[in-house]
Image 1 (tube, helix red, strand yellow):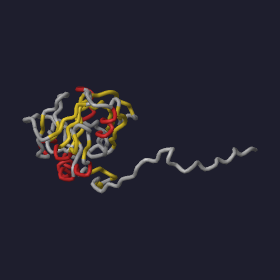
Image 2 (tube, rainbow, N blue to C red):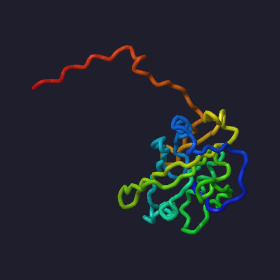
Image 3 (cartoon, helix red, strand yellow):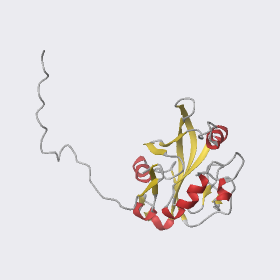
Length: 212
């Protein structure tokens, strides 16, 4: 979701400046989920930290305002959505005419960002301030927007250790869109460690190539 009108700053978030974080710490913070009216969103890299948003057009063929705004300002903020914000997010997805402030319609508030002009949305458990890196055209009506993450704001009660960038991801209570009108809750997590080559008992023999 995007915001347009700044309000007073907040003191209830933990601020991570990506310019001072090591790549390892950036990786911990960058888990990306589709949690906004844009169905296609994810993290693509950690050094530099990059997120991508797939932006299409309205059913009428009219380009979405977000495409124009990002091209003009070269800045944007990605606000992840908690289950408590689901109804407000759904309101911002309404196909209003250009010029309508969706933030006001959803009765949301904003806070000023640190590095970019667009503000972040109050109540979002995670907000990423981004500057435009590249726009990849995906046909006449769609494009992939790649943004470099300059900073991340995480709700303070979800931060376990700000010095090591440890986040209680389950406590964020994020949601993501699956398909159509179906969404998923991300609080139901399970842990599975990656397997190293050293721990693998042995490679299965490879069959020789078939000769004709």
